[in-house]
Image 1: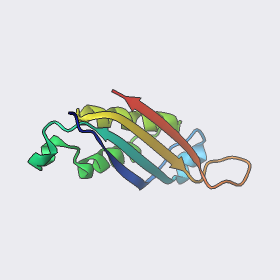
Image 2 (image 1 turned 90 degrees about the vertical axis):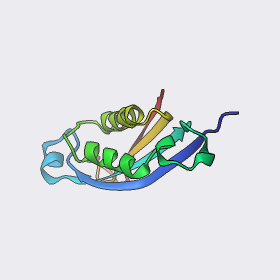
Image 3 (image 1 turned 180 degrees about the vertical axis):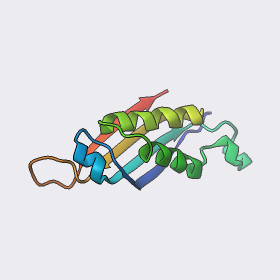
Image 4 (image 1 turned 60 degrees about the vertical axis):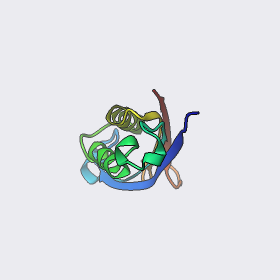
Length: 122
């Protein structure tokens, strides 16, 4: 019998400078990230050891490093990179579903945010 479970990092907030327009790079804005990680532990959960699972503190730091790092024009590319890096860093992740929200997207209308979700399956 194989155990799988999901770790969810919800609404991680970062200030960054992503987007197509020069003003987005100049001004920057908040971005929000959800990371839904499907995990197959390396050891039985009854062992109660952190190295058998995903250390979500380290996962948060990896997300932060990517979001606050180099500028991306597309939040789709940002979400994909987060998913790929987390899966590479933690081989016990079998699926990473990453959502990036951009509340101040430059669109000619009123909306709460633009959101993109990438589903990365290993």
